[in-house]
Length: 377
Ligand SMILES: Nc1ncnc2c1ncn2[C@@H]1O[C@H](COP(=O)(O)OP(=O)(O)OP(=O)(O)O)[C@@H](O)[C@H]1O
Image 1: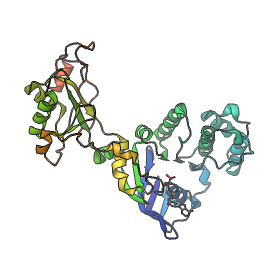
Image 2: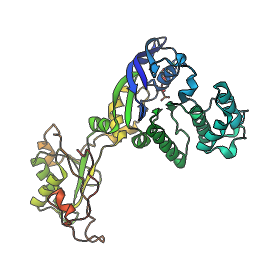
Image 3: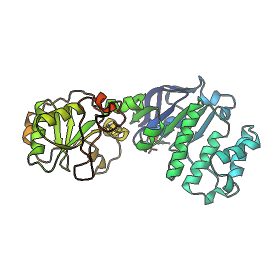
Image 4: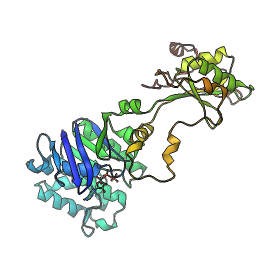
C-alpha cells in the first residue's frame, strides 16, 4: 500500500503538490489523473524518494521508499521511458539493473519475454521506437517481481495492440494482489483499466473514489429520443409532453431530443399517450471523459483559446422551443432502464412492441434488452 499524508512540494514560489493525502490499496488498479502540470509526476517522484517533500510524507508499506530494504524488490516504476542509455542493448540495460539489485540473470530473460522484446533484446535502445522504449521501461519495473508498481503514462506511444496488452498486464498485476498506481491522460483507457481513481488539479486532491462512483458524481446521463420524421409536429408534441411531465428537454443538432429527469419507460409512455411514434429511445451513459472534464475544468492551467472541451458540455437548444420556457430549472435524479432502440420502419425492421415494463422484455414481448446500466440518469 502507498500512503500519502499532507504531501506538499514547492519549487520556489510554485506549489506543485499541495497537502495531498490518499491511499493506494493492493489488489486494485488505481488511476492517477490530472491536467498537465497538476503534480502527478512530482507526486510519483516523491513516492519513489527522488524528490523530498517540502511538508508531509509518503510511505510504501509503512516505510519511506529510501528506508525500504532492497527497495527494487518491493517497488517497480516506469517514470520516463527515455531514461535509458541509447548505446546500451536492451538486455544489457536490464542486466545492469538486475545486478544492482541482486536479481538473477534468468529473470532478465523472463521479463523480456513478458513485454515481448525477446527478439530485439540485443539491439541498441537508441534504435527503439517510443512504444518499444515503453515496453523496456515496463520490463525494468517488473524486474524485481515487486508488490508495488507505479507507471507514469505507460501507454504513451503504444499502438492499439500495445495499449490492450498494458491494460491486461495492469489488471493481471492487480488481480495477483499487487498495488498498481498508474497515471494517464487517456480517459477511455483509464475507464477500462482502473478500478479506483485519484484525481488532482493544481496539486490538490479533487477526487478519491471508484471509477463508477466518480462518473455518477460528476456527470449525468440522459436519454435521447427521436420522433418519427414522417409525422409533422411529432417532435414539438413530444417535447411539450416531456416538459409537462417534469423533464428537461434540449434539442440535439440532429433533431433528436436530449432528456434528463425522466426514466426511459416514462418517456416511452408519454410518447405513446401523446400519440407520437418513436424512431429512437436510448440511454446515454456518462463517460469518464465527461466526468473528468467537468471536475477538472477549473483546475486546468494550460488551455487553448479554442477549447475543444466545450463540445462535451450540455448543448444549448438550437432555437428555444416553446416547451423549454416551462422547463424546471433543477434536474431531478432518476434511474432510467436501458431499452432497445427499434430500427425505423421501412429500414428492414420488424414491427416493434414497446414493452410497458422492463420485465416484459424477459417474457418475450420485445427484443432482448441491452444490459441495464448501473446508472443511466
Ligand atoms: N524541478 C522543478 N522545478 C520547478 N518546477 C517544477 C519542477 N518539476 C515540476 N515543476 C512544476 O510543478 C508543476 C507540476 O509538474 P508535474 O510534472 O508534476 O505535473 P504533471 O501532472 O506530471 O504534468 P504532465 O501531465 O504534463 O506530465 C508544474 O507546474 C511544473 O512546471
